[in-house]
Length: 134
Image (cartoon, rainbow, N blue to C red; front, side, top):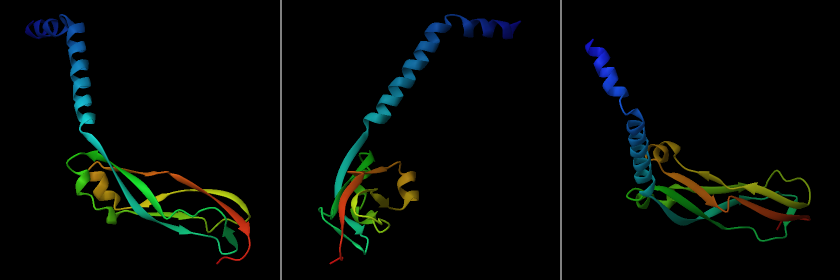
């Protein structure tokens, strides 16, 4: 009989209880995301070009990287621990080729600190023409 009374108390006014729980979860989520900050650093970009083609457009030398995470941690990240590369070496014919920027970093460290990295721009396009590489 006593268990039935507890169940009745739990179910009494249940919409208000569910609404309060949902509101509490929304407040918690908002606070968690409001402490996220973004830091932008510029790092050198390593570009591999094809040997049999010549780049006619500008070849990028640097890329901006957005470091997102807790505002107390992201400023401790050393930009030297992040490398960026683009590989156009597999381009076989003249024309415009597009490749994504690949960021190289210790994923275990960044994932455990809940830090995300994003290259801006995430892709580059280069115009290649037939000819000898310089």
